[in-house]
Length: 194
Length: 194
DNA sequence: CCCGCTTGTGCAACTAGTTGCATAACGCGT
DNA sequence: ACGCGTTATGCAACTAGTTGCACAAGCGGG
Image 1 (tube, protein in one colour):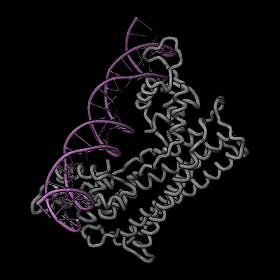
Image 2 (cartoon, rainbow over the protein chains, first blue to last red; image 1 turned 45 degrees about the vertical axis):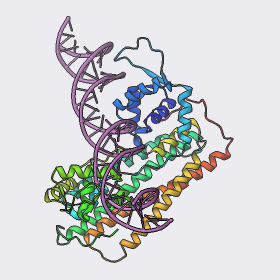
Image 3 (cartoon, each protein chain N blue to C red; image 1 turned 135 degrees about the vertical axis):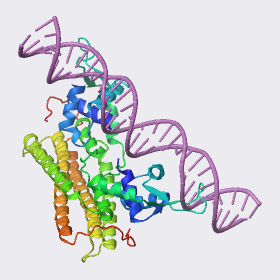
Image 4 (tube, rainbow over the protein chains, first blue to last red; image 1 turned 30 degrees about the vertical axis):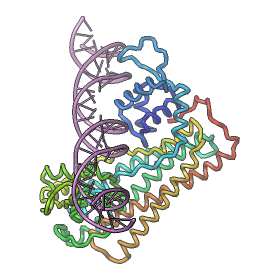
C-alpha cells in the first residue's frame, strides 16, 4: 500500500519517466521499497487517472516515447497526509530465520553454504551503503533534508551491520555443531519449548 | 513461498490442529513468519492433498470438529530439501523509512508521534523476546536444537535492539530539526543526490 | 431450554506483488 | 535498406497475502 507514495516521493525529488524511476529505485528508494518497472508503470497510470501526477506535455506521446511525470498539488497533499498518518509496522517475514528454525528439526545439511553466501551479499550491500554515505553525506553541518535522508541511510547501514554480525555469529555456531558427532536429528520430539 | 514450510516446521515440532498452529504462530514462528488462521487452514488443505501431511484419525471429522495434523515422510523430505536449497534474500519493504524519506520533501509534520509509537512497540517486543530467552534458554550448555533456536531468537533480539536504538536516534534528530525555524520545505528542488 | 459466548473450521473476494511476454521507436553497423 | 541491440512502455496471468464473513458445535447461566 505504499508503492504509490514511494513513487510520489521520487517524483517530487525529481520529475522522471517510468524508466528513470525504475533506475532510481534500483539504487536508492528501492533499498527499502523495491519495485519492478512493471509495477511502476502500472502505478504511474493509476496515479495519473487519480489526478495525483501528470505527464509533462511531450511532443508526440506515442508508445515507446518517453513520458516524464510530475507531481500535482493533490499528489503532494496525499503524500503529506500519508506520511503523517499513524501506521502499524507490518510483521516481518524472513525466510532465512525460518530455515534455521526448520534446520533445528530436520537437520542443518546444506544450510551453511547459503549462510555464507548471504553473509557476502550483506557485506557488499554494506560496502555500497558506506560508499553512498561518503559521497552524499560528507561530515559537516547539512540541511534538514539531508539530515533526514542520512537518517534513512543510517538505518540501512546499521541493518546490514546487524546482519553481517549475526551471520558471522551463526557460522561460528555452525562450526561448533559440525565438530560434534554430526547427529542427523531424526526423531526426538518430546521437548518443544514455547 | 514459505508458508507451507513454516507450517511443516511447526507440525514437526508438535502435531497440531489449525487453531493450535494459529496460536503458536502468534507467539513463536510468527515473529519472523506471520500468518492468519485463514492462511493456515488453506495451506493445511493444500499440504494434505499434496501428501505432505495427514489428519490424525479423528472420531468424527465434521465441520467445527478439531482436526490434528501430523507430517508425513514426504513432508519432512520436502522441508529438508527447501531448507538446504539456496535462496536469495527478498528485498525489504519498510514503510517507516519510506515515510522519513517522504518527510524530507513534504515536511515532517505529524511523523514524530508515530515514531514514538513505533519505538514503544519495538521496546515491548524486545522485552518479550528477552523474557522468552530467559525462560527457554537459561545459561549453560544446551543441545544442537536449542542452539539453533536460540540463534533465531538472538536475531530477533538484535533486530529489535537495532530498531529501538535507531528510533531513539531519529527522535533526537527530530528534536534538533524542530528547534530550527520550522521551515515547511515547499519548493526547493535543484539538489537531489544519488 | 434457549441465548449468547467461545472454540474451531472454512470460503470468497480483494489487494499487492511477480513473472513473462509484447510492442514500438531509434541508432548503428554493413 | 535491413537486421540487431538498446531504450522505453506496457498488458496479462499468476502467486501470495489480507479482509470480511459464515457456520457449526459445545458450554454455561438465567
